[in-house]
Amino acid sequence: MHKNMKLRLIFVPFVLLLFLFACDDRGTQSTKSIDEIAEIHDPWPDENAELLALWASGEVCAPRYLYDIIHNDLKIIKSQWCDSIPQLCGIAVDALRPSTHTLCMHVDSISFKEMKEGSYNYWDSLNSYYNLEELSFSEYYYNYVALTFAPHLNIGMVSDDYIVLPGIEITYPSCWPGDASCLSLEIANGKRMYIYRLAWGDCPSGCMYSHYWKVQMEGCTAVLMAEWGDEVFSR
Figure (cartoon, rainbow, N blue to C red):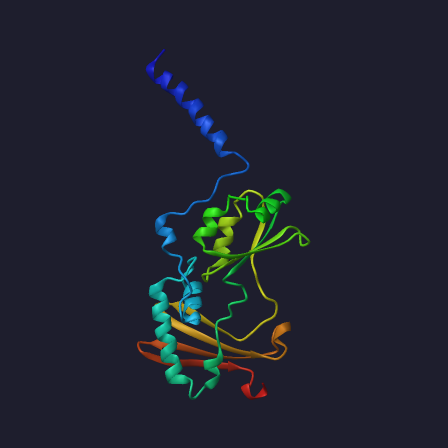
């Protein structure tokens, strides 16, 4: 028999064996590299700057370089505008819609039992990687499990990691109902634009009124680019 043919006959069963192990429907633990682990960090002092950096970056955790830039921007805006527009000082990033700490999931009955008993090991590396702080369970809400993490995280990206684990059927970020005042950031063509929204009037149902200020950074100067919305005195 040709030498190459012998090698093929040995190699093909080996590949099939690997495939069978890979297709085990209970899966394996998810793992993260050392480089990725270094990206996760405890919350930083300026929560507004951290949350804006988190959403603007599209990363699972806010990058430090962007946090520092935004932290400095917010200090400049406060020093230049909060005396003439005091409402700006009270507007913060909405950290509850969606949550940056809590991932919700529904799981099958076997996994739910194992999770409560502490024998569900498939999520161990992810729980350690994302710095899990608290677990809560409710069997009355279709095997509901909530994972609360210490850092501020992009829970949508975290959800993508957990949904592939065995027995996990649905994952989604925790999200409070209603609406609130909020601060957001747009970055385009190298310009950073901060949008302050003051909202009031039955906000648990969605807020009846809103007033907006758009502030753009020009070097070390915060420029008020636009203002619109409902009259603030009607609050």
